[in-house]
Amino acid sequence: MSAVATQSLVTAVFKKISETEEIELFYGYLPTAWGRGVATEVAHGLLRVAQRCEAIEQLVAIVHPENIASLRVLEKLRFRPAGTYLHPRWHIKHLRLQLAALVHEYRD
Image (tube, rainbow, N blue to C red; front, side):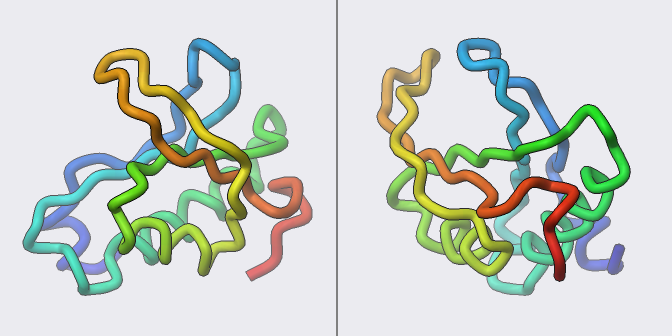
């Protein structure tokens, strides 16, 4: 991970969406990291970790529809639109994206 990533990272994890039991690739960054490739680098690294984890077969990502930068990151990693997700805490409709292949079939 680059020095920029370690200084700007808020969080990057896999988390279970309790309502659907799906595994979400989740990340968030400080504004100092925006536009510097940090999200792409770290999300790609998480995909490589997921490939080594037998319990993770499929990944989803939940994104606010106005977060164009995050949508682009996920599109680069071959996540595709897969409906919407109503955020249970804020009651805001988000976009749901799903990795286009099974995690173990994903190729860089």
